[in-house]
Amino acid sequence: GETFRPAYLELGRVLERLDPPATSAFTATASPTVFEAVASRLFGGRDYRVIEGDPDRPNLSYAVLPTLSRQHSLERLARELPKPLIVFCSSREGAQIIAEMLRARLGTTEARFYHAGLEKAEKKAVETWFLASETGILAATCAYGMGVDKKNIRSIVHYETPSAVEAYLQEAGRAGRDGKPARAVLLVGTDEETRHGGESDPGRRARRAAFLGYAAAREGCRREALLGLLGSPLRGACSGCDRCEGAATDDFEGAGEIAGFVGANPRRFEEGRALALLRGEAGTEPPCCAGSGRMKDWRREDLAAALRCMEEQGRLRRPTRGPYRKRLAPPARPARPKRRSLESLAFFRGDRLGSLFRGLGLGRASPDGHGRPGLPVHETHVAEQGPGQKDEDGGRDDAPVLEDGQGKLDVLAEGHGGQAPARGPRGPAAP
Image 1 (cartoon, rainbow, N blue to C red):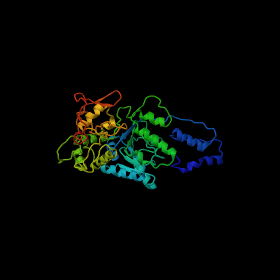
Image 2: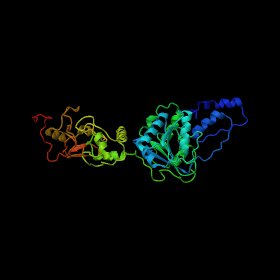
Image 3: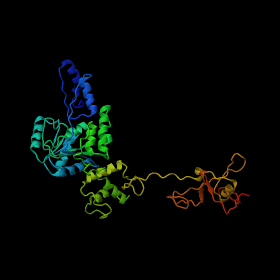
């Protein structure tokens, strides 16, 4: 595309000057938006014919893995997925960092990196090694694969989400070129919405948003969704994806274990103690608690990153003051409605009830415009749980209250005869 070769934008002018008798243009993958842009730049308003093949790769199975820690998920996948394996990264520096991380964590020399910034001799050495390797792991940018055809790659992992479906399918398509089963796994973090927020081109921004929609989808066949983004229907049943195989997970890896631990031990542990308990580290005090040891296979630094992600998502919190300061706690409950006085709910009606309330000291009198005392107002609060119950502040409301057909509240005054002496809210009985 034009972001990789800006000179492509000039091809239309070149064709006009050359005026060839025929022009053929080829592309491996293109969504309808990209195809229309290419046709417009190459052919302008001239007629052209499209010959399109089926872009589906039946031997390639697709999966999406939401994760709180890309490093943890990648290490696990690197241990479990069949090799040879390519890890696609979005930057040269990232490819080198990931290769070094995998070498250290897996204790292997069979992990290297590849990008366009390498010297020619370095590229040749890596290509020769990987072509011959049966167990190698290559961390690479999109530069790998151009002119390199290794047919027996068994697995592809995308460490970050690509910019569009075309890039994803081209890179995932490096696997299984021998026709044998292969896997493609896309890692999805909690930061997807912010990682590419600076894109200014509306077309590329729309393609990016469409692919993020695929990554975030919680239902539907992966293969059908990917082909749909290319404008191509799925012909027949899905031949392999985590949704159709019943292996998909919608929540971020590790989120359930962390939420369960914090929910079972609210405001008990600060981060250091929580990490030790979750990992089941020896000598941890207390020796056990609900949820302890549930994340033994997580490295401490990865688990700490996962806690930060959970906090950023609002799925746990650390109070900044009070006796539970810095201790891990579940999300705050939604704010409860403020207590309302009966003044905000209704007006009491009738002089008989008014004198009763004034006699009980529950209201205040005010002129109502007719030269007589106004209706009393009940200024005590109503407990959140209803009449006769305590609310969280220990308050009660024992006033017998009914609701009539007009939604106005009356007090049952039977037995008082309406003759109670009037008095102010706090003063002695009025004469």
